[in-house]
Amino acid sequence: MEEVTKEYRHIPVLLSECLEQSNLKTHYTFVDATLGGAGHSSEVAQRLGSDGVLIGIDQDEMALAAAGARLRNLALNTPPQIELLRGNFGNLDELLLEAETPGVDAFLFDLGVSSPQLDFPSRGFSFKEDSPLDMRMDPGKQTVTAAELINTLDASELTRVIRDYSDEKWASRIAQFIVESREHAPIETSSQLVEIIKAAIPASARRAGGHPAKRTFQALRIEVNSELSVLRKGLEAAVRWLNPGGRILVISYHSLEDRVVKEVFAKHARTCTCPPGLPVCACGANPVLKVRTRKPILPSAEEIENNPRARSAKLRVAEKIR
Image (cartoon, rainbow, N blue to C red; front, side):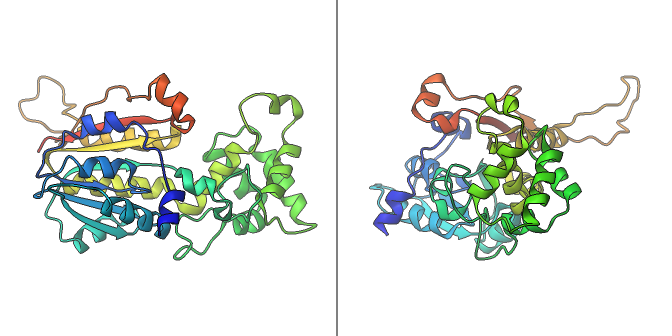
């Protein structure tokens, strides 16, 4: 177990900002919807008292094992009640009912792929390592892998996935190269796919914008795990479970995630849009959230230097007002 814990170390992004924005009280119920290695939660646990509750959710069995070991090893005088649940935050309603949670004072969603998932080649998330094209967040429950998508979707569907989930300008060309390549042999590893992508993107376009396979790998991961629809479902559930005065914190890492967060927050923060002269509101807008971050909170230059994976992080916060 100790080896798993060491391997699953994950530097928490925007940690001090999350702790400040959570507005923690010792009696709070805090839900870490993306527990990972408990980087954020280990700090939260030290700020909750014996009347507080920390609920950690993750669909990755390895993450739960590492987080449990880390939280058990905290030397706390007045530890909170800690409950770890295996599942996806898209099933937040079922998970919180299972935990018999009456209400929640703060939610944290730290989106994207954790560092250990990227660092373990067997998970197939990284374009930098040669590994099977898997990309499933929960291999035990999910059946469709990235390799299956690559080898079964037609060119138009592949183009849609790559374009819609990454804004890759060469999506159509990459999809066509994939289809042509798999006619000779199945595409089963990340290195195979990387070489196909490199061949599809003109050399002049590969000189800027980072690794040429980055956007396609992101798109496949999002499709395999239905990340955007799951995120929307999880945020909607969090709004329902939040106690008045409670807060939702979301750290996103690309524009597609950030757009979903902004849309859900804006939907529940919408105020009356009726003309000023109407004696009674007719639009039915009844806000339940107050968005506390007009602009997202970004990592400092010092944090980015110490943890390059924080570079694209954006933190948005909303508070329940009724």
